[in-house]
Length: 217
Image: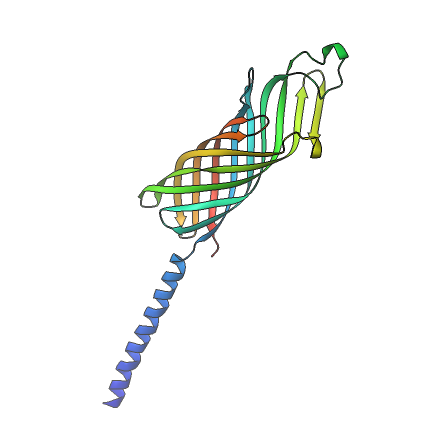
């Protein structure tokens, strides 16, 4: 009888330990709230000025995502951004004849920026592993270099202390798609409108972000 009783105790104890293990493993998976994101963002951008035109732009980098609530998460990180625009300005950064210095000409203007996003994302209408994704927030940009390209005058660049206003801020509004590839891996694809709100040459950009999120903690 004692042998049978001990066998039942061991069986229940074994079952209880298995339950604790599964419970702990499930909670550990559910508690993943820190993700690393890798993103690539092509697009078109233009300065908001007279006679400006759109040109190709792109950005990419590594992001950190804090996702503690199933309904929303926060994103920041560090990205490098190259954005461009066709502009019509006086060629003050080129070596030109004195009589031509005040005559506006068509040229291409570009910026190389370090970008820090401060944004919120909202997965909505989730069905199985798919969800609609809404996004909004701010972008902080620090310009490393300004570039000017003219068909005749060539190229000129401005960097360091010669940049008039290196610190810029903007807003981002987007909506797109999120796919849950696994419990710790997500794919985001979303178009967005990006508007500078504080800049020497404010840009308007239309972008498409492709991003992978991987849970790390």
